[in-house]
Image (cartoon, rainbow, N blue to C red; front, side):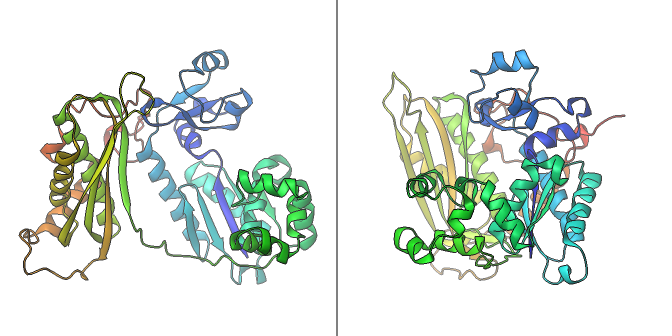
Length: 421
């Protein structure tokens, strides 16, 4: 048996946890540079807020309904997510982190000794007590059915109490008959349109479709989905997150960049952040690439985008090496006289810690005490806040930084932002 635990309106809920005056009021969270609406709570949806719509086009709507907008506070969201996952791991025997606000819990033998709906309510109450975040809990024999159960728990929250147990086949069929096929996990707009044209409109109709017909007209992925809807578990439980194959750190600038020095500072910052993520994965990399691009929508300037890559002989996780490689890439793709909108750094070709084979002819061998130095930097930045220690190449004023005019305090990760009572 699986349980999918999903936080309701996660980004917006994280903001209202520390602003009780906003409980029950419309709240939205904006994307990088305060561009578009990327998250909103139920109250904001009821006001007609358009998800993904530009912020400047909805300002009048926000003023009319008293919608409170926040810039994306990634540091706060990441820490709140970690608190949710840690609490889940204390309650459940096995937890698979699926996304920043979702996790699958595996109840291997729990259903033999405890009522699962009761356990779901306990999970919900405990998370509300410890984190002040409300979750939906969907319980079922497969992951796909657990997704449907979770959808029902959140859609009919008052009737279900936020917990739906689909252990019984009759309940599964009853729910699937009510849900459109587009609600099924993994079925996108294109596939749902094709299914609809074939007369398969509800989830129950999909579950009852002949497997041979699905295999002939669609991919093996949809066949697996149909089997899951029938109660046959095809998606295994992954308690440990698989190792990343690539790390990307990129941002759109707060304003268009025209000077080389500003671009170099931005790429140094992205390289430093990518290096932090690399060390968090306990990996070394050999491929470092950087890209720059102008806006494809600029009417007065021809679009320009380019990318360059450096391959190291000896894998590294040292920020200094990665910054040097990113700067080398920039020197090859920079063009004067352009207005750059975005840039980024990508790391690839990973090696596990202690596995890398050193190269006899490498002109840049590993730096002495590199790992110890990086560990000190990471420890200080983790305790005191991101950016407490940084490399001078990242700049001080940083005019290229994202615009986050409505950024809330980092309540849980910075001493200076702690709530005062």
